[in-house]
Length: 168
Figure 1 (spheres, rainbow, N blue to C red):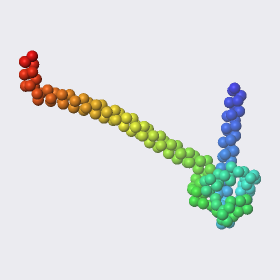
Figure 2 (figure 1 turned 60 degrees about the vertical axis):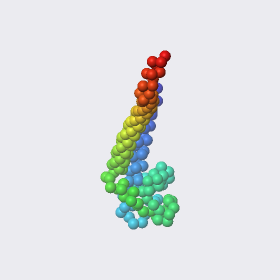
Figure 3 (figure 1 turned 90 degrees about the vertical axis):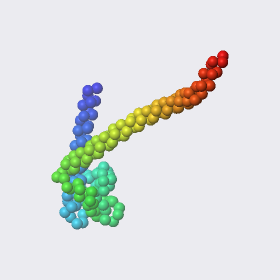
Figure 4 (figure 1 turned 180 degrees about the vertical axis):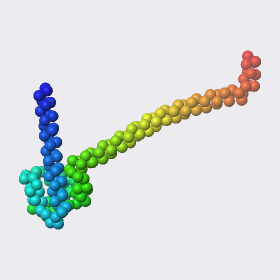
């Protein structure tokens, strides 16, 4: 059991190292592309030998709109240019700084969303309490109205009721 846990930890460390390596490849390519006017995507191989065949790198670039092809389709030999999203990555000193900043913003938005959800839950709870109090108030109002109607009838006809009681 412990052996499996150790293997899982080692695999997680290896995966993180691979992600950092791929991120550094993307970051280095963006830095090169920022300096050049025309560059083909294949030149990413100069940074990392197998980068053009790495689907994860290409998918990350596409999903995050870091680089676009000048002719429209994204391929190995396409001339590419850096987008605004790509430039925002270059505002950081390294890929790790970019990811750290991105994680901080995700945590911050998660925290805000969590606070919103807590407030929404509190509002829902208070709404439920308010409805229960309104129902109690309505029930009391109906009971008091019935009692008032009966007492009003009795008091209005009190003289007649006393006369009826004396006859018997």
